[in-house]
Amino acid sequence: MLQEPERTGVISVPGKRKEEEPAGLEIVELGHSFARRRVVDRVSLRVARGEVHCLVGPSGCGKTTTLRLVAGLEPVQEGRISICGRLVAEPGFAVPPERRRVGLMFQDFALFPHLSVAENVAFGLRHLDRAARERRVRELLEKVNMTDYGNAYPHTLSGGEQQRVALARALAPEPDLMLLDEAFSALDTALRTQIREEALAILREAGTATLLVTHDAEEAVRAGDVIHAMQEGRIVQSGAPAELYVRPANSFVAGFFGPVNRFRARVRSGTVATPLGEIRVARLAEGEAVEVVVRPEGIRLSRADGGSGSRARLEARRDLGPVHVVWLRLADGSRVKVRETGIVDVAVGEEVTVALDPRHLFVFPAE
Ligand code: ATP
Image (cartoon, rainbow, N blue to C red):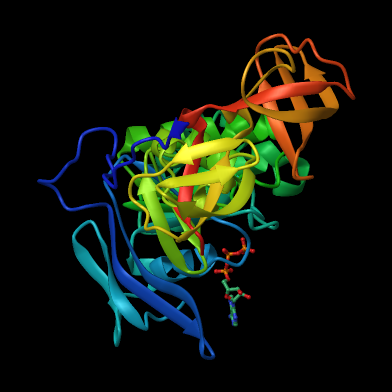
């Protein structure tokens, strides 16, 4: 019988915690409703300068609304927002967006079409004299590898180039905080990764606190020092990417960062029976309804004559070079997905023996 893996509720955040200086962004108990629908619910987070945090969750979970509240595009109904130790919004109080020292980048690049690249970048620098402004524009175009494009107009640029210019424009007034809302989603995959990595490297180097909103779990895992997983208006877990993968707080988080197989069951005498085998659970009450979540790599296969374990039939397989993806039909009729890195010496239609790997399974109270 399998022992459920030990889990702690402790969240560790990577990197140095710069406790002595105020956070680049601090959100405390933020709440927001449209009509009477609550779309942001007691959201709190803290982004240190030079850190990149990702707010990630499915469409409609409240990410953009959170970002708009931080940017000052919506009045705050509940909670408070501070940027570099300065209160910028709470109910009845709001520093106007242009005085928050916040840079914004959205999916549509929103460059001014009638202005050249250099004029777009110079847009937020009207407080500087002409020589200083030109110097700063040159510096910024160099930083984003667009030195030769100062006189070009946005419509003559590729998506990636427009995105670089948008970044230079957002960086020009030296914001304390950068907000990125699906900022790279319009670019094709290879370019998206490259531009995102370049942009985040520039922001980290400048010591800017960055909050990146995305519905794309992979983007969050690749980009974020810290990830905040958002579900129905609430942050359900914050932590390093690996933490959310290895110790998900609930079934939603477990499923958001990769495919999973799910089973419903009840605790009986300290164990939970699944069609893949029994799991011993320590911290759940007798009779409690649970959801067992098993990652595809948490199911081990062997030939049917390969020893004890539950039986299943191999229904389909796809060999992806180093990894084999296999679909099994279990004794109870359910279907599961398996990822095997070893050799799968079993043909479609044959019987196999299956076993669970406790490192890749989670048992949660049923919601
Ligand atoms: P997406 O990735 O699809 O933009 P999201 O996680 O960013 O989703 P929000 O845009 O914050 O989600 O929207 C949260 C909820 O609030 C949604 O159900 C949306 O329909 C609703 N909503 C957003 N803006 C308004 C508005 N101005 N008036 C009424 N409802 C709104």
